[in-house]
Image 1 (cartoon, rainbow, N blue to C red):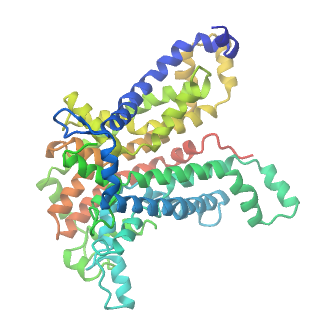
Image 2: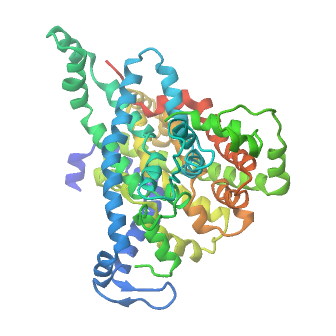
Image 3: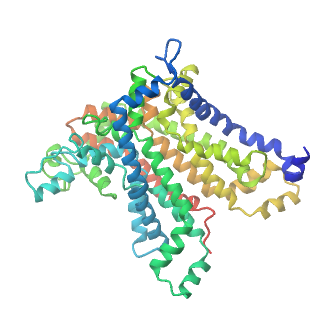
Length: 522
């Protein structure tokens, strides 16, 4: 107790009860959806278990068998190649865009919009869009290549070695989070440093490479970790295009994991979006004959068909309910945790922050079996409520990171003045600090909503009925149902894409302000 009294102020000791209560919901989420699955996976990895009978301890046999398996070795090699591309080309694109936005060169606003908008589209939607971009008959890529080489006949997602690169293109150019993290650090660099460098005769290139880049190394490192982590957990881009083929050319670890669960063995720009929307108004013959022409007429019969023939409005409402519910609850929980981490000192503070943010490195598919068991235990399988609960856990790391920065940017003098007036802990949070952090709250909320709106893997794992299908799942259903009815498929793609784009356009000012909270230039 003496140590606590010496290290922490009387006010902080007095508020320990509130601090614990504010952290408790996030700690429960961490234990249920991260710590428990990780421990379960580790223990189960030493057993033979079919998911029904008692597990049989087999020591390290699973690991030995895994490394003997050729599919696993190919998947590991694919992961290494994708990670190298993610940590170099993918991150470099994000850094370059960050510098363009930072310098505000002519056309930077257009660059920002063109670059940001595709990043809010779901991985499932992009996978299907790219499947059509690389389509052998009418895809943009093959159409352009045949203008130079009429004999070109490559089925990108079905031929080796093209399939690997086709899958790579579905994610390579979309590095929004890298851009925003680096941009945030650029804004925080004092102008005195660059002015001193200019006085010493440094050129713009020298300032960039000798001042800005070294000072942004932590942000770039964070971008590398985020990019590589995304490649480790990549799923939709593969399962909706190649399903790991041809052969095992595009197989990866999440797909192996999902296949083992199924086998009961647990141990560029906005151009593609414009093309999709325009194609939704074309006839099939117009799409097949020339993908670059404008539609001969504008009609909405295909959209009307989707709502009348299929339960599209129900899918839409399911996605809205799950997205809104999980986002509101997540904001309520994570804002409290981020607040006490940012504004107060308490025992274990650094450990708690590290544990929360390190969950960003845990691939979602790795937790599939324990979470599936938890949802079944709660009798919430095939329920939008069960899916909502699971989605609450997804925003833990990113939300804490963004909200903590927002709360840290608020001058502590505001709190001190309120305390002198007799304000309570909860009053200061609710009436002063939370309203001042609104940009961060809106940003975290928007990111969580878009991630939950676009989520595919757990929606496919935890639901089975048409009644509880979400829009990303509906895309797969429509892809199978409208195999050769491209007009209706493009219309379905448009309906899934547009809400995310509209949300970004409406809230883009708060989105940028929240992500750059704390990064004040000067």
